[in-house]
Image (cartoon, rainbow, N blue to C red; front, side):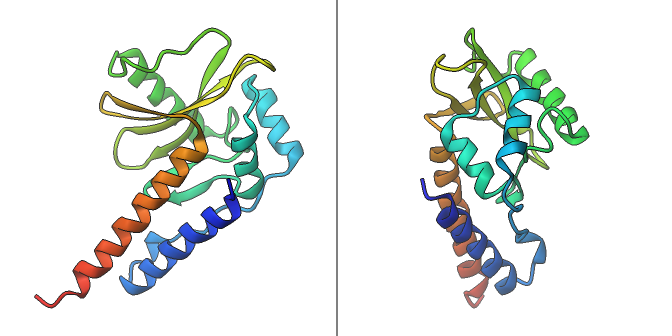
Length: 179
């Protein structure tokens, strides 16, 4: 996964749309890269092992306040930031109420909130192993009882970036059409 290309392409699409639509809120730059030490500290706080792909994302872009409509948390947020804790508690309520019937956390894994939308109750969670060699991580996009499983964070991020870019292009085209 080429995170630099994906992050750059999405930021460019969001920036172009914000300029063309005169809506600066559509474009927020990604956070600077995390350090290897900061990533390791986040893993220790959470008690998990990030997979190589998610780790590489954090080393390219340590979270992003505007990945489309999703806020992706950075290493300083995980198990440390107040907003992450509040949002994690909200996500936990979602899972505790049975709204989510498909996301079962297997033994040896921990569910970690990695992103959340501001308006709706949509959570991006990862299942990370709690020790080395337990198994691969998985990514889930959860909202209103519709929990979609992705084989990795990279697959989710790539599909989400494509959907965001497409929607922004459609919005520009719609607003450009004479009425």
